[in-house]
Image (cartoon, helix red, strand yellow):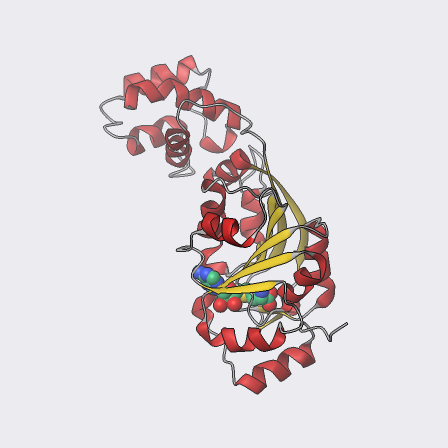
Amino acid sequence: MNKDIATPIRTREILEKYGFSFKKSLGQNFLIDTNILKKIVEAAQLKEDSAVIEIGPGIGALTEQLARSAAKVAAFEIDQRLLPILKDTLSPYPNVKVIHQDVLKADVKGMMEEEFNANQDVMVVANLPYYVTTPIIMKLLEAQLPIRGIVVMLQKEVAERISASPGSKEYGSLSIAIQYYTKAEIVMVVPKTVFVPQPNVDSAVIRLTRRERPPVEVKSESFFFQVTKASFAQRRKTILNNLTSQLPDGKQRKEEILTALAASGIEAGRRGETLSLTEFARLSDELYPLFN
Ligand code: SAM
């Protein structure tokens, strides 16, 4: 087996060989701990014939471990300076395809059709660039891609928000959006010392398993998300105050909003963070005909 990329010594050698300097603006914190990488790969529960989409391979630390466990790895990397490095470090792995693209602009579905077999088991696995964690995850989920799930390293605080339950202080519209599409679990918390350079925040690995169908049925998904976002606009405000200030012409339509809250069995003085997914679904369906 080839020497692992993700050791402090090998990583330093590679960076020096290419005179690579980290770009903070691209969220470049590379992993230098093979044990952590192996745990990330384990969490993805890959099979021999699985395919993986990676976002941001860096110098290939995680890509290499994925290539050893899966049939195919397609990795989106935005930083052109990393392409020659990846060509070198990943040369022993012909099952890796590096795609020089911003994942937020990429046609991921099109790429899957081109690179993967029909009905292939697909996971997204990544150590995400922290400046765009949420937009990347939301893009992958909203696109309704045929993937089994997502295993990613991200800021611990975001991982806690994503997996939070109603009533906790981390619970918010992000928890709802992601739990609508997936079952979310924190796999492990990761110390700063396993990265170079070390990030300012603590990290965690999270596993999102895509649901066959959403846990609640709503008349309009986009309106449901609009209502949940509105309800958390100001965390200390009541649901009534948030809805009247956020929904179009909400202030003039306070009576209608009160009626919708009553019809959903939700007291107007409650705060967004106490509402379950089911309650939000009922509320959004009561409000929908009034605002659409
Ligand atoms: N996977 C490597 C590792 O674990 O050592 C690197 C992870 S580093 C946290 C994030 C990587 O994402 C960097 O290589 C960065 O250049 C890349 N990146 C940042 N923004 C991106 C984007 N919008 N699309 C694709 N890659 C991006």
